[in-house]
Image 1 (cartoon, rainbow, N blue to C red):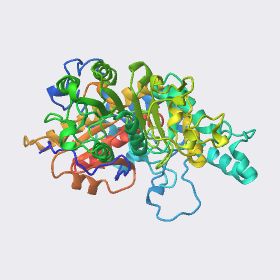
Image 2 (cartoon, one colour):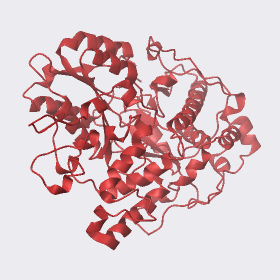
Image 3 (cartoon, rainbow, N blue to C red):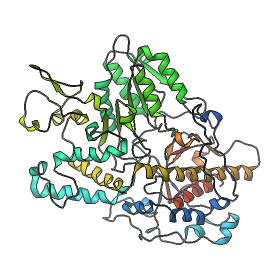
Image 4 (tube, rainbow, N blue to C red):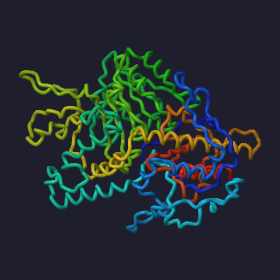
Length: 546
């Protein structure tokens, strides 16, 4: 059956790569309607609005290449290092970084293969060397590719450390890409993160820790249960680390998660409508103190209406926090304008800062004020404090009284790793070359193209079988483009996953799987192309048609 529940063991952190062969184009230029269910369409949004129409030749490599030639963001791909087909098989370090010719282009496919859809993978992939053939990397929702600038920024940090030692804390080296001394780097990166998350200014952002640690720090400040208002509203199966954090925070206050946690359950099609969320808020408003949801659900890929949900909850006196692990760098955000109380995110997915990279936190400006009354100490929002959150002007005075830096950076506890900051600095430098609006525009086109080609695969597979069985797979991510980001979650027919994985044994396409039956297809607009989408879907075609 296709209705397998989301697993409890999937994670933000541990991608399970799938390596797939390159395959053949679609056989029939069919128009595809999203294989979903009526309930995928929220009452407030039409799933068919702004639908993208594709021509009859959309299943050809020539079409994909023509779209890439018109892509105004195609230059961004040059700023990333792609694994090659050969490097994916690497088992030992050899001092070599994967590389392929900057002018690498796929060879023109044989006309006969394009006309009848029966051309071999080899004919369409060409005879280029595995050493120089870039992998098709569709795993940016688990770990983004390495920006070339990261190495430059890390080298600058290492040179600074080697050259001046401890003076690097206060020395802004000339000719350095790092944006200041070590003690200024986190604030500089907060400034660069403002347009990515939609903060009012750098004072609303803290670059610190990792996502789950930041979630604990935020909940320590913003989950303040009372005898009457003690509940947290969350989804039924968030990423497990969020589940553990929420439950442990409830227990820390001597409460029982069975009584203090309200879980939002999806319908039979893995969809949670905005209206369901608003009704749940209304039902529990008198006993709820915190709403904590993901901006994008990691398993289904559903993008929630953060603006509407936040406004509704806050109108009921409920504090609102968002886990933006799969939203930051993926979709445009306006956290300040939406009135979000706090948010947390990682930087190793769509922000490309590397595995386990330093994370970010948002605290709305209304919570970051620091005041002093006559004869009293500093007054500020309760928090877990540490010396690096102290006001920079007196931080090194080593005073006994804690006076926080105004804003979110007053939540920083420890000196952040300059190595981690350098990696994030390199990653964010690529974002300075574009805007979230531009990335979103391309993402919508890429994802729609993937959806269209996947629909052709389903149609062709059903036609080839002719036995009336359920389709090989369906997309469980909402069809409405306003309810999804870059990711399409593909739920395979039960029993098909192992066969698909076995058939995708050759190097070529890197995907992400979530047991028991889901593969997540995530074309990242910053470095993926229409050709990548074409090759990825043809790899899936080859597997399910085998």
